[in-house]
Amino acid sequence: MRHLIPEFEAMKKRLPPGENGVLVLPCLKRIQEDRGYVADEDIDGLVEYLGVPRIQVEEVLSFYGMLRRAPIGRFHLQVCHNVSCSMHGAERLLDRLQSRLGIAPGQTTPDGRFTLSRVECLGSCGTAPVLMVNERYYELQSEPLLDVLLEELGKP
Amino acid sequence: MPTIYIDGRPVEAAEDQTVMQAARAAGVEIPHFCWHPALSVPGNCRICMVEVEGKGTDIACNMPVKAGMKVFTNSDEVVAHRKAILQLTLLNHPVDCGICDKAGECTLQDYHYRYNGEPSVSVDAKVPATKFNELSDRIVLDNERCILCSRCVRFTREVSGSNGLGIEHRADHSRVQPSSDGAFRGDPYSDNVVDLCPVGALLSRRFLYRSRVWYLEPTPSVCPGCERGCTINVWHRLEDWKLKSVATKENSRIARVTPLENPAVNGPWICNKGRDLADLFERPRTTQAKVGGRPAEIDEAVAAARRLIATATRPVALVSSWGSNEELEAFARHLGGRLACFVKADHRPREGEVLEDGLLIKAGKNPNSRRARELFGDAAPSFAPGTDLVLCWGEGFDPALLPAGAKLIVIGSFFDAATDRADVLLPASTQLERDGHYTNFEGVVSAFAACFPRPAGVADAEALFGLLAGEDAT
Ligand code: SF4
Ligand code: SF4
Ligand code: FES
Ligand code: FES
Image (cartoon, rainbow over all chains, first blue to last red; front, top):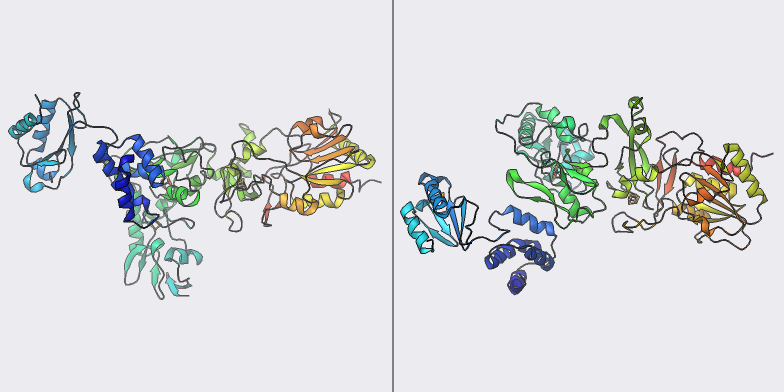
């Protein structure tokens, strides 16, 4: 995380002194963008850099389910299974992905290419069912569209 | 000073008080879990609901007083709210009071009996959690019993400063957890969270399953661990519940030590050393007087010591800084003129012990150095040439330092190298077996009382001093 310190310094400038605790969340978010997850050494570095108690970083990490402590696959498939998406067949999409990729939600393919997650509302109910691949939304999905998507992502 | 009305009674409140504080000052106890007088106000438990005329209900712990406000602490609406809150508080609580050390002094139990008293209305299974979460070798946490009031967490952040605890995860999965860097293990004040916890979630491993609290009673005392002299309660078996056949040793053992709140000395806290006084007092005791290494009657030993004092040409006394004010004064009166007196440190810092900090712990590890020095001066013990007798009262004297040819009289409670070497040994009572006072480093005098009988063969040092001076002798 050390190479990110100049960015963190810029955030710090916008805060009154002694309020470093506020930076825990944005710093963790940035670290995850950069590395893909938050490693032990990132926690050590952040505790040292911000001067906050370690428990404060651990609380934030455990509270936010989107902060990861372990690496994931190159493509993160997050399938919404909240009300609107479920009503439009989210479970079928999940079943399809599970059988095509051979993994259950929460798992990563052995080649490290795909990670599958079942997530709550992605805020795009109007175009349900929805999934995200890394930072991109794929709306109004169906099983045939998923097959096309997987092909684009290099699934043999 | 605004006047507010609590349940119809006019109460003078201070400008900056909350309704909780004003009510307490007026002797009205409003139920509370998360609020604690010495911690910040998180307002998370909602049990302290009160009704304000014209305003509805809200929490008392975070409600500023306002002149003329009419507060009701027990109206029908308030009671209905408390019942509902208790249903929520107990939603995932295991209600295993039968095996919980806190039973009998648990506010959740008390409030439940007072306001709710009904089984859970929930039909869902309770969310399980860790029942034996080892926070340190001193403390275990039962996460199922925890009501997430955050008192323990705030204590480590606002009082002890270790930042050792936090609440991890969220909602039904929220759990108090120790910081992974071990900060809680190293917190010398950690045991205070056991008292702070309103339920039986945080438990002392030393006390775990040792006794139901209603078989115990507290005796006010003073911690001898350092010159802060924190006031404490020493808990021991109630007279009526003394064990008759099994484990009778428990009758005269310290069950636990808790702080005795004292704004002049320690506030509501003590350090962990104060919790471990059993280790100090339950060391092997001297109970047999000795003369020349052989067992003797106490009278015989006193007579022998008296002869040594009477015939010595250059006697030196090492005065205990663990003696009470009364004992020190008696020593000065009876023997101060006869012997050259020096104050001795009975206890020195142990390895790994916190030497001194900004909260309570002081570097001087004896409770009454101040009064001892007032009476006997600051000089370090030394033996002038020709010293032919050393009278050692208390512990901490290395007999290797005894001048060649000098005799040694020891008045002591516990075995050490000096009691082994003594020409005359006189067993003395401990502070748990007699009343007295200590003067702490700031000059505050605190009292301690006897909680156990004196063992056979042991005398009070104060009585011995008069006898040794030969004042009853003809
Ligand atoms: S462990 Fe006790 S003091 Fe700590 S949050 Fe839970 S109930 Fe409160
Ligand atoms: S601070 Fe000193 S007097 Fe107070 S409990 Fe600790 S050792 Fe005992
Ligand atoms: S329910 Fe799927 S995006 Fe809202
Ligand atoms: S005591 Fe007021 S909300 Fe907990």
